[in-house]
Length: 112
Image (cartoon, rainbow, N blue to C red; front, side, top):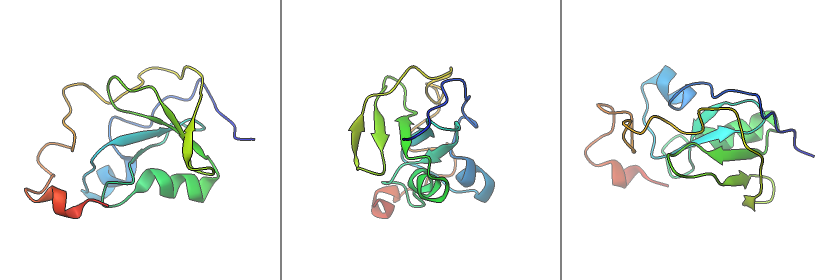
């Protein structure tokens, strides 16, 4: 059984690892177990799924404005999940892909 911590706050407004390395992302996912924010599997680095694999925290929620779906990396399908601590998305004025200033002009060529 995957542990979901409804009180865990997001680790930030962008992918934690991309922020550390100067990378960029397409969309963001938030770990429902610990709040880690990572980049989606379309992103070059795929940090959200790497976090799930490395920690066993299998369930993530979209961290995109207007989206409230959950994904279970173990079974590779959408699942139901509870309300998580705010904020539940990146800031609306933060672009996707993002962050502003680090996305290459040919970003579509780098998608998975």
